[in-house]
Image 1 (cartoon, rainbow, N blue to C red):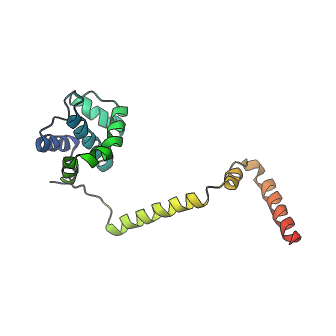
Image 2 (cartoon, rainbow, N blue to C red):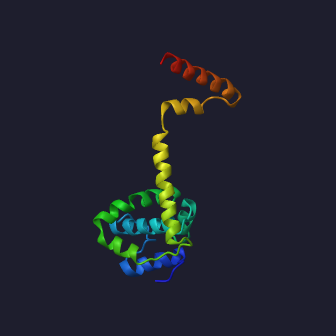
Image 3 (cartoon, rainbow, N blue to C red):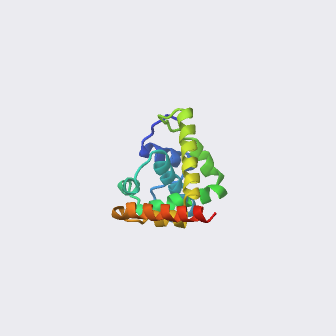
Length: 155
């Protein structure tokens, strides 16, 4: 399958492979699951905005709102657990990234590092310090230094 696909090419390939029209206005299980796959691919792989995904469906005679797209996207992982065909269809598509493997690894490393930092510094004390008005920072710093010196003196 070629890289850098257009939304209509993705939808048409899914229709062709599954035999299910994702643009049909119904709520049958398989139609819902295939629409969910399309929403997942458009959002996750093509980085389309929710409104643009909804517009894409509406332009193809399927009534959708951005909220419907979000709902379909969020349910995709659940549908994929019970429908092997979804996994197969998802794997038919390859998407080209401008990042090298080293850059991707670096991005994952930095994302994980940020999550660890957020957990480490998510304390009530830090929240209080961050709430200090900018005009009062010097006064707060002086008071904290005095408290620390007081504790050191008591040792």
